[in-house]
Image (cartoon, rainbow, N blue to C red; front, side):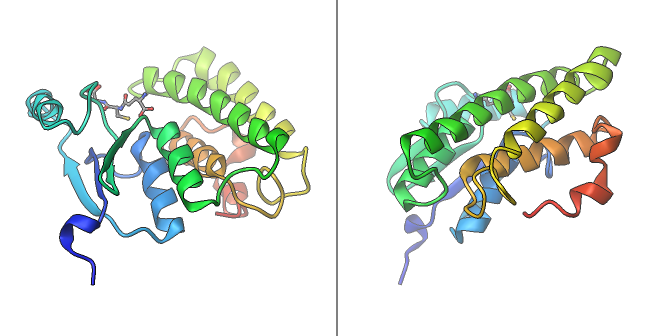
Length: 190
Ligand SMILES: N[C@@H](CCC(=O)N[C@@H](CS)C(=O)NCC(=O)O)C(=O)O
């Protein structure tokens, strides 16, 4: 029987499907890893909460997501996914080249995430008309390297969760280019 302390604790803001944490949340669900959810309001109480999490050693930077997992504390959402993938021996490329491919696409996603956060309250014309169009065209190119449905073909890898969330988050903020709107998103394999 698992005790409460064996179950990983997932710390994140209470912002629904938006943000970096949802990428980790989705991955944990797919991997069948049960977690205790510790969700914090994204309001005036956050700075105090963040300090408290720092004091508890849950996050060094004061930012989340943070995952208490098998006696360790993991932060930085993409490195969290890589750690879990190695631990589970799933969700990554098999060869050095495949792993590079997955890492390279995740790096482009990280750049997208920084931009998206910057324009969350109000997207600039440059973001809507140029940046995201280039980003999704680039993704289409990378996803065409293999037959599909995932980046590396039949095998899902950690980066597929991140790319799905970028589409989902742009859709929620009204910044998904028309070509990628929900009717097309519905056919996305996740
Ligand atoms: N490099 C970190 C960035 C984490 C981050 O900026 N998280 C945001 C939420 S998505 C946060 O904690 N914001 C609260 C704050 O900045 O105080 C990662 O990839 O996880």
